[in-house]
Amino acid sequence: MGIDDLPQTAAATPIDQAASYAYGSAQELADVFAGKAPGHIYTRISGPTTLVLERRLAELEDSIGCIATSSGMAAITAVMMGLLRSGDEIVSAAGIFGGTISLFKNVLGRFGVKTTLVSAGDTEQFRQAITPATRVIFVETIGNPGMDVPDLSAIAELARAHRILFVVDSTLTSPALIRPKEFGADIVVHSTTKYINGHGTVIGGALIDTGRYDWSTGPFADVAALAKRAGRLAFLSHLRMLIYRDLGGCAAPGSSWLMLQGLETLTSRMRAHCDNALKIAELLRQHRSVGRVDYPGLQCSTYYPRVSKFFGGRGGGLLTLRLGSRERAFRFIDSLKTVRIATNLGETRTLVIHPASTIFHEYSADQRAELGVPDDLVRMALGIDEFDKLKQDVLQALDQVEKEKA
Image (cartoon, rainbow, N blue to C red; front, side, top):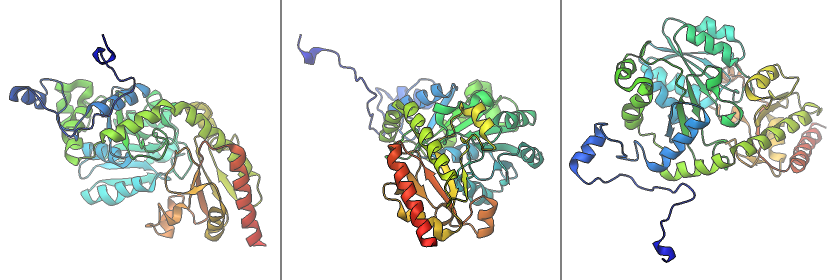
């Protein structure tokens, strides 16, 4: 028997690069469309490579199921569009990603959905913002760029008491640091573009049902009706065959394959991201040019007890610093030699950005102040670079800020 006669099985997940899937008879395809038989129909709904990614993410989050999307924003959009109607309300943490706030305020607001922003670190503000119309509470595990850490357990308890869905964006922590389900999250979302991919090569997202929410009761009537047939999978079924399908925010097979490669090294990379961020935060905190450093992994941080409780003491790979003015912030950024100026985070390389003039440039000065994005704020996303080189680059850039001051 020659090698060509042996059965071949790929040791790694292959890319199933197809738009549609063929069947042997009209009845077979009809049965798959009707849900009477398993199978893939069209990559906008599902596909083999993406299915592997979804199963692995669901397993990492110890959850009942996952839908991979074309971006993190597509994941959040699918959740909200799948549940909310005109007159419904969201209570959201402030200090979160500007694109999410824009979705809530500028897009969902056009359809009659109201969003109230509250301080992520103050559970009492969430309590006070709840009304009979509140359907969703939304937080990030670590605010980007607010750098605040919500009390996930307390907010989850509050949400359960009012039958409100608790949605947690775990992009900045990833499954390597926390399973939000363990602290009461109903839905977990990720921008898999960030730490899960880890290399800045592809855009993607994911939404995960932890299985904690009882879809058979509560205010989401269409999902409750579906729960009579689909049980705990009602919400995922509702999204897959209606919202996700019709909005078209699907993950491409090649994108899913790149996410699977990132998952292979996620834990070790997250460790390096966190270690570098902590060391740079400690360095910045002691430098005379820096007015303030926000990194929840610092033991002096107000949020360190929550970092210890929820993330095992690791504060993620993101930090912010304040330098006194926009001019000084720009000078620092422009003086960096090896750190790249870019809008992403979670890559192997260290990236830096000025949030007020980029991600939040559409907001007024008053709005940026409300969102915790002052003009002198710099955001650094620490990569897994060699620390000594990072340290040298940061110190020389701060020296340039000091020279200009003199």
